[in-house]
Length: 225
Image 1 (cartoon, rainbow, N blue to C red):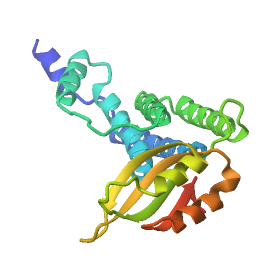
Image 2: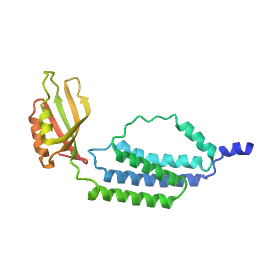
Image 3: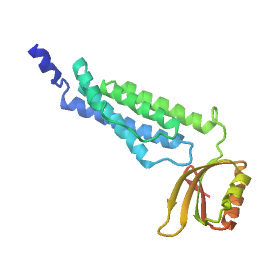
Image 4: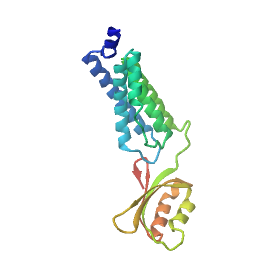
């Protein structure tokens, strides 16, 4: 019984094994972040998510190394980590897939299957990039991030930019509103799906002509129009 209790706290791997596992997980995490950046097809991604993918792969590796083949230690870690609550909403299903991608590679590095981890990272990442760039599955993207400044006037009328959005956009969704200083001016951010991407400059021009609208910008895959 005493030997079983001691085995719970026994860490069977050496420092060299731990460092090598974390190093491979770091390299694979960087590759995963790179493939995410290249294959992402949305209107913009947070830089912190790329950092999180790299960190997630390494942390998962450490968890698997600590658990090893000890069932009691596994239950202990599950109980300890169950108190964590994640309240950050994941906006894209692609983000969830990459989170599981990083978790799986971290687990592979944790059991020291380095060849499998590196080969899987490169193969899966390359397939994702090919699918995103060749439009074999995806339709041509027409979604943009639209940002502009608008001076709010409570006159009971519909804001003038609504008609412009209806004219040029198939869909529009307000995702962020930010006040600018102590004035009535706000920065509005929309996800918009253009009816025709060739009319993007015309939409910006009409927006700037609308009452109260200034500094209109359209972003798509880190490019600004």
